[in-house]
Image 1: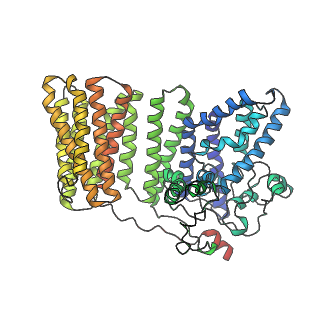
Image 2: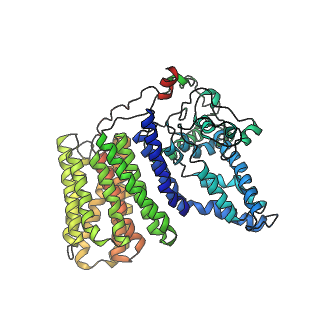
Image 3: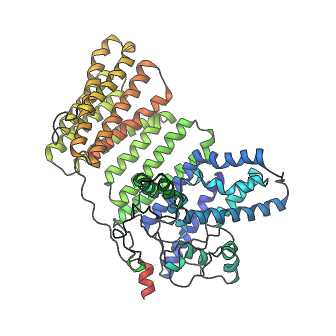
Length: 577
């Protein structure tokens, strides 16, 4: 993982060179939105590996220790050469099953979603590969390849594949017949009928020649996936196929079919779910390029924000082994939030101010655990100030927008007051006011407390929390805290009841926001009055900002997102010319 960090400057230097070469040749293969998305997915993959790498390496090491048939020496160069060849052979089958089996495609699809083919595409990697990918490399452990050798040759195999993601290197003669090359790999990324599911080799293409999966590049390649992602959301890119598989498995009637959905080729459906008239057969000529229009300024800002996240991610990866798990989790969450915000901005799901609010909130959540006290004094009021500004710039019914803005202003006041010594009760009063304003806001488009089950459940939860903290409360705080608990419980009851009336994704998000408020205040109260706990303290701000984001983003109607520009795929245009 450290080696990848040190390779980052090389990756970006080569990306810059490739982009300049493309511009000079009049054949630019980059779009800033696609490149930002691919690099975002690369960052997400690497920071997720901080938590998942033990699956792959740990299982391999255990099998090596207890099952290995031989004891191969890491000091023998022949072991290294043989291990690299064996790894590449195992990788071929890992890669091939990644296309031929739905559960493995759910992970691997991330690498193929880009409709461009350039060096940034090489960085577009899955975050879930470690969950099952280790299975394919167990033969190496059984044969006695030491874990160190396995890890190093795996890195070599991965790094080799970086340079073959380019359209600016043509055919290479004999080299193409032996090794994975740009020409061979362009075929692999194409959705053309004759190219589909071909050329799996990582370093050597001879595996494809041996097992009948090799095709030479002839016609123009059209890149992407046949079911287009049409999103710049890096989180959804990783979940897209899993979500579809879960849905199909849930709807399948037979127990065997519920399992087959995961093991059959991608797109397979049980007979009782097949609806051939709903989805026309794939036609290459109908492929369109997903390309939501954004201003040059937004594009540049997104690239600058991404550059900052690349630096932050590299620092995280370099120090991950020495960080407490809680700190690692907070940094990971902040980085994911930043990547998600950039995707939302490029896709126009978020306004610029909303994206900045998410990023500021993510930084604020890190300040206290990491000891950034001075920065905390700036970022905490800045975060809610951005939320207020975003609400002011929103459309929607005037009365509802006024109540939302006032609620956010009261929350901002509460934030500032709680930062000051001896201002706990005034801060509590400010937040109580904010919650009352949110309750008033949620009664503008729904009856008061329309769901009795929601009332009963929330009363039970709030009562339990109050019973837990009550003995530890100073006598002077019992009445204010009890009133506060009652108001926040009322807000949660109203939000959940409102969701049962509207039955929309937005109303459910607002209800979730109210529950996050309860979670944040519960963590704060237990940590302050019952038992000081670093984990609870660290959870207060992330849950608080999640609550504010869900309510402020979704309680008012979201602005209509303009349909994305979907021109014909440029490779199709080039082929026609």
